[in-house]
Image 1: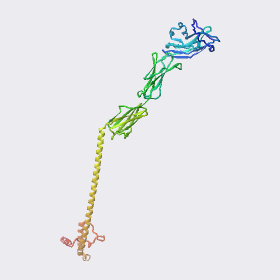
Image 2: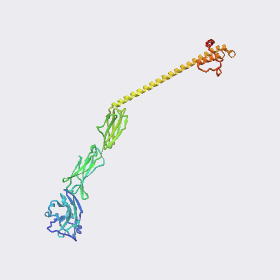
Image 3: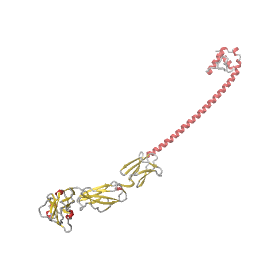
Length: 451
């Protein structure tokens, strides 16, 4: 059995009400963590329990002592405590119940180090638990609070958020504030969180569309040190069409409908009578804002309606679409061109029809002329037949002999400039050629006789 003693007078913690049970008796041993972490400016707790060999006896007078290295930081006789720890240490456990837990307040970085517990029991012995030293670490900055809230909340419906704050001293809780207005609840009972305690704070609030993608923050103030935790809110809300939505006309008529909603909205475009629907030319998404664009050329309505809807509601706006002067001019010019083209086609068709009619008339006239010519030829043939009687004895008598035939052929050739054929289709002989009349033949004979 090992034990150690310290010089000096020892003050004992006495109580007649609570005694150490012999069942708890055993050997000299203690149970405490190897290290604890405290926040600068706050307090820190060292949980501790101990046992001793009672040997069936009951002891009522105890003195608990805590050391930092060789300096006394806690003693029932406060005069024995070093100045740097006076008024800052207290034994929060009951030694009669084997509880030796120590609290150190207003912790500073100089408090870091190894701490040991010693028990002095009157009429028994004194013992220092050197094998159970505790290392204290001082943290300058507290941990950020943890904010919890539903992943998605709906605009106009109340929701509750919690802020969990980790601290080393339940008796010295931080001051907690929220970034959003709402109803605050009392902090929960501290829960173990490793070596620290965890206290939760609640806030009940009603989110709006303005809270979407905004931080819900919780701040904890520890003796001049403030830390903040936050959660980004995801708020669902119905569509709202922004006042910046409008139509403009340059070369084209362009209408823009800007919709703020979550989830994103679908947009339909309608003409003045709502019967004619148009599809967006382009869609651009920018977080909760969606920009719908409609472009038009000729025949664009003077007013256009933008209708937006999602799972939470709908909204609409009617936009004035200014008529572009250039577009109107082009429309009028196009109409004029169409009319002129129709007139030109009509004139061409009409003139072509007249020419065809003239050709038919000319052809008919030619046919009539040919018919008249044929009749004249027939009449001449008949006249030739009567004159030929004079020459019926031509083969035998040959009135004009070869000279007369030659003259007749020459005359006929000069007149018609053609080859003369007889009725059988062979070349005409001198007897086949006859003058037009007997008088004309005599005249011709006289003329050539004088040559």
